[in-house]
Length: 68
Image 1 (cartoon, rainbow, N blue to C red):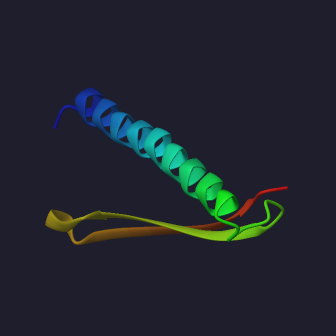
Image 2: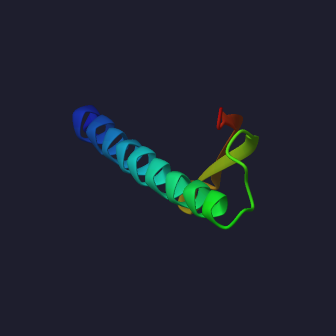
């Protein structure tokens, strides 16, 4: 295994996950505020799951997103 290729590939995946995930969360929150489902001052529970089926790998992260 080429460690440099492996590490670069993981970083690329995580960067894509972070950028697209943030964009989609922002879009969903703005839409919920526009629809009156949120006021804009809530704290939201969030969970992310990464899976790699071939490895039967599953990693979960839970945290809060504060809207202010």
